[in-house]
Image (cartoon, rainbow, N blue to C red; front, side, top):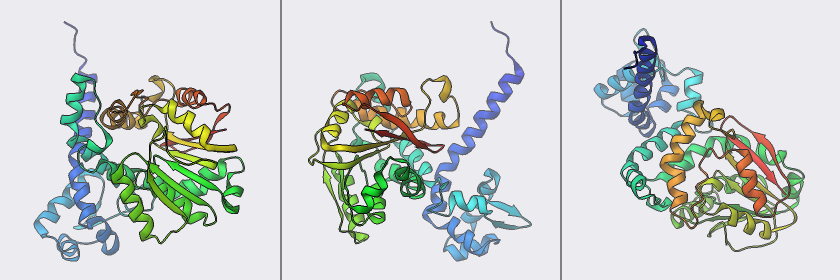
Length: 349
């Protein structure tokens, strides 16, 4: 029998205990967000338990225990009987447009746990779990997860990194946002470039309904949404086609690449935003890779396997593999135009 290394064992147990602390925080963080506890604490803090409970309209005994858990997690600051949010904590938990707001990640984690029985069965059968059949509002959670990145980088950094695209958008371009989900990315572009026209496509009717409602709520007239698959959506002669965090989820991304190439005008650009990843497992053994491999196991791979072909690239496919898929559709040039800690932006022409 191999002799145990007590130091290594203790380090592992400590790491797992830390992980469990984060895991059991998922429902508490979601409660704090849903009931406005973070937002209220930011507004009135430093505050005593009763003050926060009264301001948020909640029962003091529950708020006391919630605050204690948040303080122990380092999510809320505690000093001399009063609780508050530091500026850094507020950016993560109380400011929806912050680039580091992570509430959507907690929503996604909750949906992944709820999705366990379906994915667990798929492990035995090898079949997929369709996007529309995933537990809870997985698509709502994922939309919220990616929202901070899109709000803070799409118009400000990603589009300007593409060759000549901003000038086209300002003068009036025709754009398709393929795999648009709830339409956040499409809406952000339509707001920034009122002289261009945008069409959002997604194969999930529920997401298209939500995207249409969001566009109407914003009073936008230069965009519309249609149900359509990446490999055969209607529409031609686009100046720009975008795919945000969805190429790896497609059953047949090679067919999608070929169709997108045909749908672009000569000189058009395909922008592919994908999760940040290296090309090997060794490069992805890090906190970002850990997050994305887990999400890929529970969401991305099952979604792809539920579709035709089921290539199942996974969320950590890496730039080299993604470029191979993109080039298979007839594109000759692929480059990384921009990146963040969580995403890479590829330009294909």
